[in-house]
Amino acid sequence: MARTEKKAVIFDFFGVFCPPVHGDWIRARGINTDEPFWKDLFERVDYGKIARSELLEIVSQKSGFSPEQIEEEVGAAVTIDPDLLALVGELKKNYKTALLSNAGHDFLESVLAEYELHPYFDNITVSCKINMIKPNPEIFLHSLQEIGATPQDAVFVDDTIKNVEAARRLGLGGALYIYRDSARLREELRAFGFNI
Image (cartoon, rainbow, N blue to C red; front, side, top):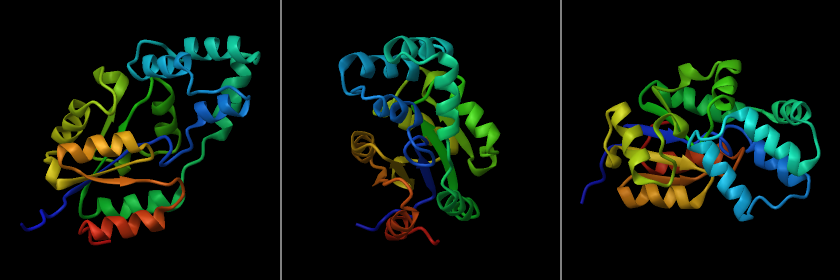
């Protein structure tokens, strides 16, 4: 069976382009984010059921830090991987590129605007806006539809194995990303047939 020529790459954001700054901040305070309370909280944020201000209040109550201090420190931790951004710029010349992120209402949009990232992507799908989160198969199909691609046309890049596996079950190529290792990702994308 011949391999389908790839036409698109869909990227996660936090843990790929940028560290998972909220979770990192909480874990740095000795709080276990694998506990059910935190998993439920982040899921509600990703579904858009909790505003950023409410999230900051909850984290403040649990950590003892003020919402303002949390916001300032989390914001200061945002960094964008320049090598990965350069790779996306190369890809965009010949392929569709998309962003598919589990995120709440305000924070991701503010980062995309501050770092002028919108032009790098043909489509940006944020979970809170469509009331679906990864690894739900429907969110991948939504992103694909937005860029006019089929699962066989695309590769999905994420730092979370369950999301990569969900994409693979739909027929997308899947690449598990290790933060700041764009050289390895470049080789993986070449193995999928991307000319970069």
